[in-house]
Image (cartoon, rainbow, N blue to C red):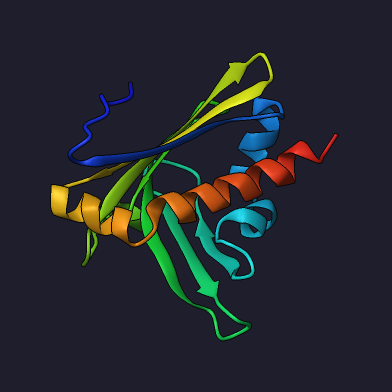
Length: 158
């Protein structure tokens, strides 16, 4: 079940990725693949935890300009529906523990499309202020860039 888009609270990125759903799913669930596209290049990503089950930890770090890796995302998976949906939040951390700075929840959906995969990232916030902060932080540029990087990664593979 996907919630209805609320323009006051939500931001969405969608595109058709010219690759099978299984390839997009692998890019989301394989640590080495995920690290190749999750942050806008030339920044680099390191996955510390990716426990793909409800309640499992989801922790990444970011390195910009070749510097030290710093915290990026510390969250929790809420749902994993193979080849269809990944739901995560930074409102909780692994083991369902409340996070110190809750900000957003995201639903990633994959559906078959005649040209490959219909990919949607639906990001929800608790308030309009948080939504606008995320938008002003560069949501469309950032999430758009990583979605493009994801597409390039999976579209080039046979």
